[in-house]
Length: 278
Image 1: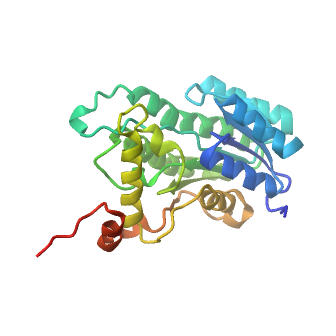
Image 2: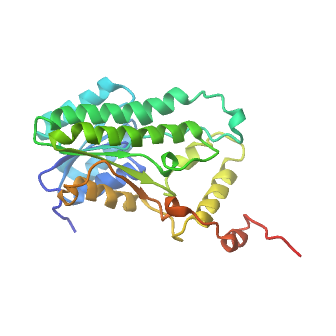
Image 3: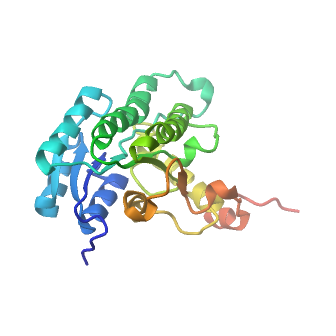
């Protein structure tokens, strides 16, 4: 059933062709928004736009190129006549090494370029229009990896922590223009991002399976998160319901950042943990 919570609004979702971004695009469109899907995956992006009809358009964009992002905003304004919601969702994972001592930082520039520069460029170019149009909502997608420390994908964690701090700072700087800037920090969501961090490694499938099992055992809520869960959080931050909300970080993680708990019974049942014997 179509809603109208975003009726009359125009949104951009970067990384919108698949995963969390696709979920947000579909939810926004269902609530009456016109949406520009920005992504490097042309085939998936065009397919999604066509499936949503005239309320959606696709634009091929490399968010690590600020000129490309500026062109995205201009395309949106020319196509739909406005911009009310900017979701900086596009992101990449770093390589998951067995030890930090093995990390050669070869992916540092790519991870920071997409995850940090892309968010800053999207925030800046969207805000320049919003400041002249009465305000708007900017939603930046971080991760619980930017909230809590961990021993793996450290460059990725650093990039997502930077997104949080940049978003809070932008929320302060842009409040005078009635522009709200908030973060969503997803955690334990089933998307292809985890697999991309071990792509090409001989035991990639086994490592993904083991990591998923550990997530299941340490997450307070016993079900994994979905793209729809993130889309609901984004809808709230995009809508007028959150008109007095800015500068927050919203974990959507099954309670993990509240204080993850190791359920040894679940681990043992999965075969991930063997309890000691007498």
